Image (cartoon, rainbow, N blue to C red; front, side):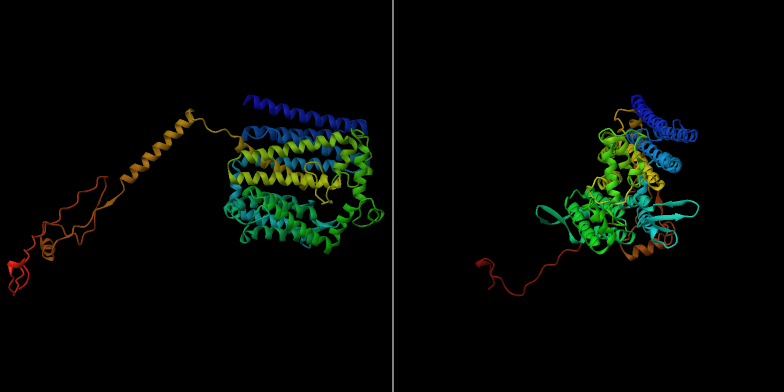
Length: 535
């Protein structure tokens, strides 16, 4: 355990040192000095992070050690880039991002301290479903729902600002999907007909995936949000495959979403515009098209290309070259100043977190925990893939944000809660089995045997009802009832014996011997000379 603690402290100190070096280098190149206000805010954030890690070591001693240092590095890199853009554009977004980081760390600390057993989330499966659907559909409300850049995925609360409820909806829906699939995995694993080497599911088992598909298409159509729709449907299909182990569910999911996306692209202009911009980004028609053109994609590609192999260096790039440089296209901004080496290092940090989460999902023995861990990790991995793939023209742009790095409080808080849940599950997965020779195990075994013995004694001393004494004849009953020395059992209640000894069975009076069978007299003579035959 001591070696584990030293390793954990070393990783944290390394992450803090790299983050501090990045901030110092960026501010020295942009302003020539480290701003005092930023220094105070960053020191407070580092103190909260150290408190979080200390409480993790106290309440989750067997948790994964590689998740939080990677999260710290990604968060510090993102805030550094946001502050770099603020220095050039005169904005003040980085300070708000640090405040959101405070909130995320506090909420994550509460989860680490009070959520000792993640299996308690299974009790609120349908409550999680209701909460998730309410959060997912809340942007459609006429008063608080807000449409920004063509997507209605924001909720504006007076005095608090705007946030994306879909980021929190993915957590609650992951709880519900894990509980539902854990309870119904046996029915969903039963196969139907076999087509082209795939064991297709039964028709009656397609209900859940149809419902989720309809909900995803509804989000795509109503909210104009391709990323959220794709993320929820992919999360459900991945968890369905994890629970059943059947590849046919993946094939059905891909075919269903492809068909729905093609139908939506042909029916709704906003989806078709993103597909056209992806297919022909450098055409003059798509580049100058407004809205829905490809100019965002092209500027992001130019930003990545200008970085080269090692980048221009922190604080020496051109932030105005990339649109939405601190949010949707922060990966392109980082590619400009850190180069290909820097963005590959960022992807490696994400890969470490994802690999740690999948290792936890494989090690945990509880089925609900396995589904929950795999669902949460897949959600984050899919989100990273869609953002990076959209910027690099692998897939169309989806509108999702890069976890831990992009500007936005809702995304930062939701992904920190996701990391805290993974830490709680990893603690249960890595917890060692009790040794058979330890004193604690022997004490628990003796206590279990003692409880078993006490239960056996309690069953042996249970009240035993004495059977009634049946009389032989009605004459005997009348005589016993009239005899004053014999108690009248017909009027008094039955009594019970308080000991474990079974009372002796009362003697039943013997029956009188049966009379002899009379001889049957025949009226015809029998001739004995021919063997007893009739004459």
